[in-house]
Image (cartoon, rainbow, N blue to C red; front, side, top):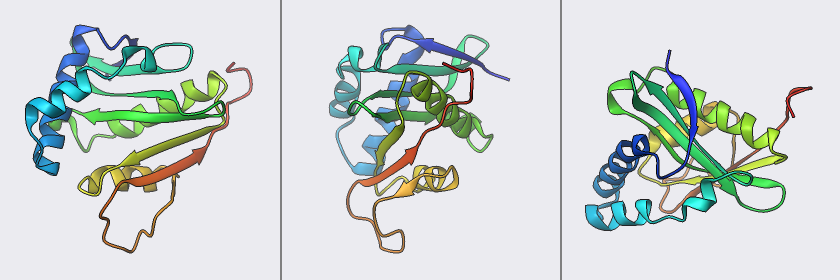
Length: 161
């Protein structure tokens, strides 16, 4: 079972996550790899830092096998970003675990709602959010052509704050 670790974006274990996301986005959206990688790497690290954000890795044998982050969207809402599972570990429930841990931490920090978007060429992500109780803010029966927004109300178990 991978260990959950909250890290800074500068942590070296985040590099594989960003590199793999860049490759994935570049391929799925026909964008230059260097452009996508630069965009992901140069995203303001403070957005994923406490108290308003966080970056989670699931680590096995010193290597990230899954991860994700949240940042402040508004006073009540956190936004999920960078949900990722290493391709060798997909289909094992790690993405669900990442989402659940991000939701829990966001709620613990005082957020009452989660917002996120995913792309039209990421059916696995769309399926994950629908399966984990997110409300789609688009026609799920239509062929998507643009960003797919989702939201979910958060609750914190008693004593967790």
